[in-house]
Length: 378
Image (cartoon, rainbow, N blue to C red; front, side, top):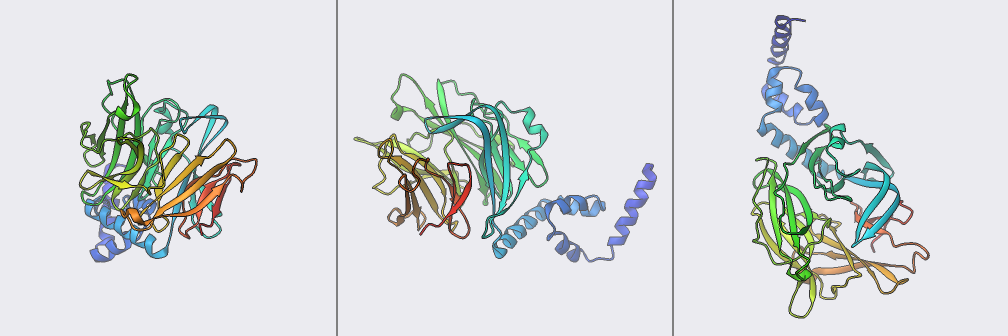
């Protein structure tokens, strides 16, 4: 088929759709899933121009989110790394030998029995330093991955599983100050209509005490495609590497540590993606710093606040998993301990690992047998 024949077909396609009012075409296209929209860009030039228009993209995005909220649709991305051998160092898991990287998208129905496996695009494997990625976070269908399970590769990727495309973030400035601990956050800036990745870098120095290590940060903007400079205008604290993050109310949240005059204290470090300012949220006073305590932050079950899962050991055989939920966001007095799982409930096994809340309010945990189990919280 030559160029003239192609032009004639395109012209005929354009003429067919001139009979439809523009607002009707718009209302039809805005209701289509992304894969169907991509196919529609091949129908004619006017449709391609419309679908690729930033205004249409924003409207389609808002419509999909509204539909999900109205229907109660809730999807959970579960990432698992299968390996014959694991070891743990400073609350960080390392897999040894041959590994299998699995991504499963669960439909959060009552039985929690519907899911599909998602494969990484082949191009991602070519840039990996380690044999698998870690999921930093998900937001509006986009997934942020980091290559830091094992060696500190720190390849950062924003991936759209629906259309199987990804963006590799540019390399970050090298840290020329000994070692460092890096934590990553990912979320959506509704003010600037932008997706952002935040790096918290705690600089480690063998000649300094842990509480003297400074923490810096920088922000990547998907709109500009670049990193900001390393900045130091955040509360003094230390954030250990590979910390979980929670994106809620337009802000990213991490568990952080700070030393006061007489003791170490935990608190939640929150970063507003719109204003790019930090704030502190205090933990319940009864939650004391301890080397045996491992913290994991999450979104609360109503999606409007934060929760913290604490794994701590009273002795070698006596250990607990506490579930704390902040009922009113940013209100310290509203912290509530919802449930406690003790080693007495799971004799001769490790405690389950709390992952997140489901839309029905139950807690999704990973059992010692690597089985996903939904537990009531009351």
